[in-house]
Image (cartoon, rainbow, N blue to C red; front, side):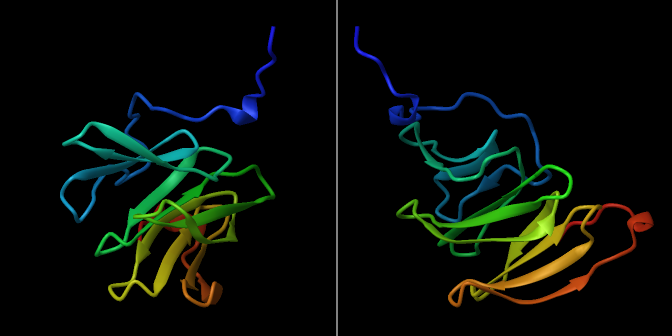
Length: 158
């Protein structure tokens, strides 16, 4: 009997939607695709053809997802274990390829938004992190960062 390597398996479809994260169901600007996270993947579901595409690379539950104004980029961030930084990945929507990624927030990415010009991604860390980061996509570097609010101020979104 032939042995199958699990790493050779390819994801065909995802079923479900758990309603998380906040603002996690997004209509792509093309008006045809629904973007949403499920587990460690972001799904682009074409509701005309019923075909799903996947944006992979994160390793834990997705806590934030966003799409740029023109739909060029999709970004997602995740929850990580205490003491570890949480990655954010930015993908090209058309090709599905990761454009860049960075890890600047501790434990959780709470919220994200692209700038109107699509040059920057602004991300907010969770309650254990408390920072806002401005990331320059073309240069693939953190432009600046700052403390957001005290942990007693509650949970915020970008």
